[in-house]
Length: 107
Length: 119
Image: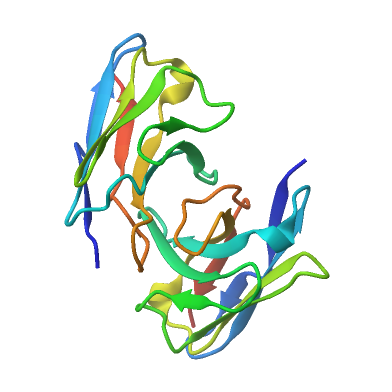
């Protein structure tokens, strides 16, 4: 199985801050990576797919980069509605696996 | 609009069975692979199973393999998950989600349905 390791597990930030979350795969997954945002009591929402493609309707302050084993989700200027938990997910091979999540909290 | 609505959850005793349903609308259901993803209380996301758009392929997570059966009815825009021999560790919110293929990211998602396995 491909292990997905996210860091940090939590981050405290202020509105307007730049936030970067990293995700490392235990083996090469090329660009088969997605990022999701989840708010309490809600289903996850797809933000980024194929490592760097922005899902329709997602604000441009979200961006993704990386390939192979190392990936990054960046929020360029944190907004109040961005406080949530973020997950990465690999789609390279079965079983499909997620990172452990990164909780973005208000500083 | 695009919508997935799960049903069939609730409280079930260990060792018993439960069938979850997912009703799709607002998109061409028969063109999408369909997945189940679960989330234990306070925990992260775990992929459970997928069925291809044409019902030919099915894949399961090892944690539930042998106890699960995924199926779909494209004429009714319905997805199902039959869960047998349930264990307390199967307690979770179960989401149905669409994918462009069996190996895929997930969009759209349902709102989720809680399954509690407890005596």
